Image (cartoon, rainbow, N blue to C red):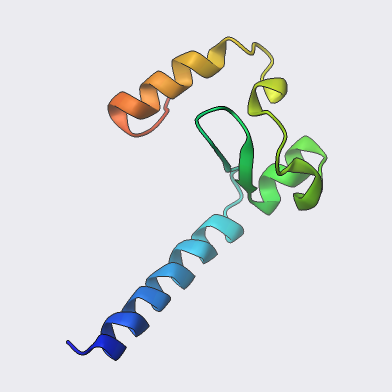
Length: 86
């Protein structure tokens, strides 16, 4: 593989993942370890009633019905790589 081929493949992969993120009907939030939201898809913005510009930087814990759930979810992500059924 040439450097150009590797770059093109990486770009296509990035586009594919970005499309999955953006086009998902499921709300997806990406936050830093400290809780600050760094990315949200359109479904999350619509569900939570924020624009993309408004939601970035919000502490994700403020969006939980029970803010203490954040610790459980973070632990599941760190040990399993995902949260399901919690």
